[in-house]
Length: 323
Ligand SMILES: Nc1nc2c(ncn2[C@@H]2O[C@H](COP(=O)(O)OP(=O)(O)O[C@H]3O[C@H](CO)[C@@H](O)[C@H](O)[C@@H]3O)[C@@H](O)[C@H]2O)c(=O)[nH]1
Image: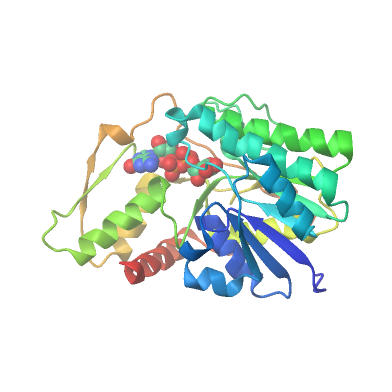
């Protein structure tokens, strides 16, 4: 591993993944520059401590992104910024597309113009880019991509822009096509929602011990965020990943929402029962989505290290300390 003093730019640094990314980078000697939209004054103290510098920037503002890249000229870029909430994208498709696709376009254009020394850019994609079928085999990177949602389309456009910059301008950009991330600090999605609900029940015994949930038979490829950020860094610094290529970042196993609930029940200080809430049921979605991480493993030597039980225990512990 390359331990020379080099600058890593982490975008979306205030998010769930961004904060874990920065935590992971503390083990190395990189200068870490964090970027997000939030004003510097609103940054969590722990995050601030671990950054060499923080810059507030809106990626949909091209002039601001140009200024950022001209100033930093990063060695590596881990591009985590964007609108990551797939459910919200149905209500805000244009904002989602601007944030994910236009934001990435501005970043790559600025790097093309002002930062020829940048060695690798890792853009975070999504499993929602794939054409989803009802009984899928494990998804591999060569499978068709016709997304079924505005979020999926925004991420596919982001990926296509990356591939265009790799091909047309020889920009060293690759795509980490990421599946469902879980673990400490999760605030959104089914995992963040359930952790939050369980900790609320633990803290307030006056609350009825019921958790509302959508379709518990749904199976997804859950991966701990700490395993994912290790993969992102390896994709940035390893020799083998090729520009314009997509790499699945996933566990290779599908686990149901019911299994997640069972794990939570085991780890919770208070027992609960579940009730179906139609609000959380999405129409026309495949029962199972699972990825194949073989290409990532081959290119970087990455292996998953954290299982579902550890993710649940650590996320509960993290959330208990927050409330
Ligand atoms: N939110 C939620 N989802 C539920 C519930 N019950 C079942 N689900 C099902 O749980 C699955 C996962 O939903 P989310 O956790 O909201 O994740 P997502 O929509 O797949 O999006 C996340 O993963 C993507 C990669 O696969 C990411 O790209 C995206 O940013 C996000 O993190 C969906 O199939 C959803 O229908 C519930 O009570 N709440």
